[in-house]
Amino acid sequence: LKDKNVLRVGLTRWLEKKEGGMKLLREELHNFRGVKHFVFEPQGKNCTVRGQNGTGKTSLYDALCWLLFGKDSRGQADFSVKTLNEAGAVLAHGLDHSVECSFLVDDLFGRTNNITLKRTLTEKWVKARGRADAEFSGHTVSYFIDGVPKKEGEYKDFINDICDEERFRL
Image (cartoon, rainbow, N blue to C red; front, side, top):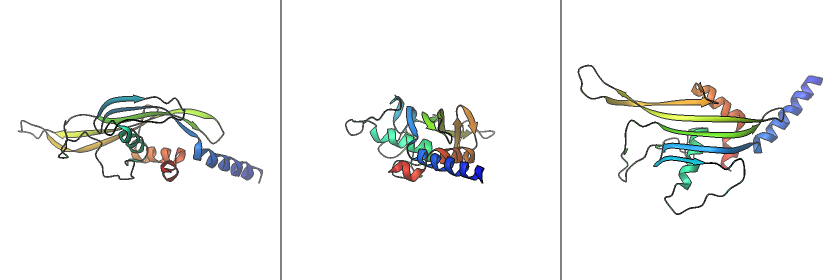
């Protein structure tokens, strides 16, 4: 009974922390929706991103949403992280498209941990025997937590433990 009460109090605190216990330290984009390379470093502080139309404000938020949930800022999973021309065609092939962020996250016991998450989309090209050129055969997505490769399910479970998608989008 004593242990159950401790667990209940711990879970209550964790759920409270889950609502506001995550702060962005650094966000780095590579070849993401027209942004070749960009680093944003709010250092865990509240900040406002301002700029003219087409300067990358939404891409910055899309990158964060894609890193955490595999969707854009509108909740769409079917969107391109690649740089497209006005006709919707990919401008450059063979590039890795990645987002990496460092966060301060409060854990179950009230400790603050620094974690780094990374998601990378890579094109797969296969050169068939007897053919001169390689052909595009799809994509792979790689997931990393603190630099350690993870399977998709492990990554999603970890994200779900630290950040609820509905609360994040509010």
